[in-house]
Image (tube, rainbow, N blue to C red; front, side, top):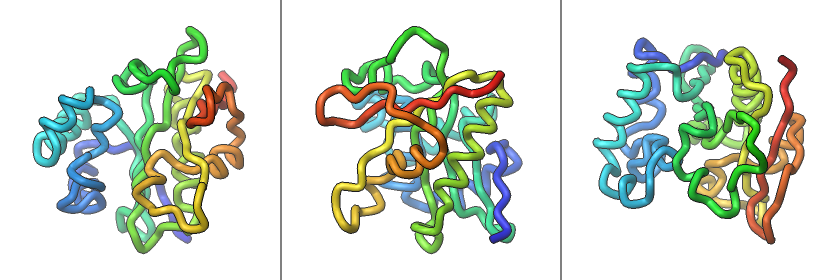
Length: 188
C-alpha cells in the first residue's frame, strides 16, 4: 500500500472535496459536527458547512489530515486543539478530564472502497505525529466500541476503541456505560 498523509491545505482542498463527495462525507457534515452547536450545525448542513470548512482550511492551521493511496484521496482525520471543538465543551460524557492542554482526534472518513483496510489506524498514527509536531503533549480520542458483528460504517466516524488501543491510547475516564475519553501522552 503506497499511502501518504498530509495536512489539508488550500492546495489540497479539491482532493478533500473529491473524497467527501456531494454528501460532504456524511449527510452534509463536512466535518463540522464537533465544531458547532446542534442548532448551528443543523442550520448549516450541506453547502454552508462546506464553506465553513473551506474557511478553516484557508485561514490555517490545517483542521485535519488527508490520506492518499497511489495519489488518490482515500481518507481524512480531523485533529486539532480540543478547544476548537465546541461539542466537547458542552458534553457531560466527554467533558475535560483535567485542565491540561489537549489535542483531539475527533472524526475519520475513509473512502468506501478502502474501509476495513487499516487506513483509519494509519490516519490516527499520522494524527498523533502531527499533534506532537505542533507541540501537543496529550492527544485524546472519543471512539465507539464495536457493539455489533457488523457496525454500520456511519456509526464509526469517531473511530473504534480497538484502533485507539493499538495506537497506545488508554482510557482516561469512562463516565457511566457511555463512550470513554481515550488519551495518549506525547513526548515533547
